[in-house]
Amino acid sequence: MAPLRYRAAETLESALTLIGRTGSRPIAGGTDLLVAMEAGLDPATEVIDITRASELTQIVATGDGGLRIGGAARLEDIAGHPDVAKRFNSLALASAAVGTPTLRAMGTLGGNLCQRPRCWYLRSRIPCFKNGGTGCPAEHGENQYHAVFGGGPCHAAHPSDPAVALLALDAVIVVRGADTTRRIGIEQLYADAATNPLSETTLAGGEIIEAIELAPAAAGGAQLFTKLMQRGAGDFATVSLAGVKRLDGTVRLVFGGVGPAPLRVNPSVEEDVESGELDQDSVDALAERAMYDAKPLELNGYKVQQAAALLRRAMLELSRA
Image (cartoon, rainbow, N blue to C red):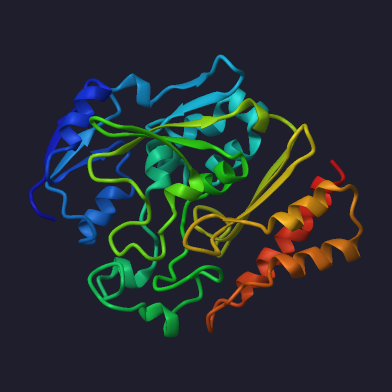
């Protein structure tokens, strides 16, 4: 790595001012940023520690009954927070599923949402669409862990577990720059993940995730998160699934590990799950419909089978909740 300067920001305002400088990047846990820099994926020359800005680390209830989680809140704290576990349990489960205890103790929610894909071509500096090349070598190469939905020109699968739960919970991302504030959904955050050669998010230079907001309408009900991995623990998902059946009966089902961003299941499938208790024949037909647009590569067709299996199980559970 090239020589790197470190500065600590005491407030959110000072952090935004420093991050706006050329070559500066925000850092909290650094569990992905430093690795990406070492791999040559980020040319930063200075990192700005944002963990001293209390606004970015808090997990607090909002006046309307929702929850606001600072972008620099630790995954360990989110997983163990009683209000998150009680009212937004799919997020608590997804946060607890990230990596190892050490990574959860250091990693933050904002950093996890913004991490780079774990594609070995990208990380090994083999020319590809995301690191200066013109195509995706995984498309006809080693692609067993890549996307089966929505891939191209980049076929890497997004690695975040919490992002999957946050989409199921209809979370709002508060994005801050030195002079701007934007509130966007998770889908907007990853709107061009497969087609942007430089990033997987729509964050502009100098912007950070200030907070993640969960509305009271998403609290409670039946919630789940399931993750399949090559290894038994401490690994990235081959396929994951978050499911939520709200108190008003509406259902959200979201896959992870199968696309360049978290992927919401066809809304028509969700609506059929809302309609009431399903039998096995019904969930089989719905799973087939949900997987209709899958386009697996040569070595990752198993992901389609895994995703369908997780979905069938979740639909049965939520339809009977």
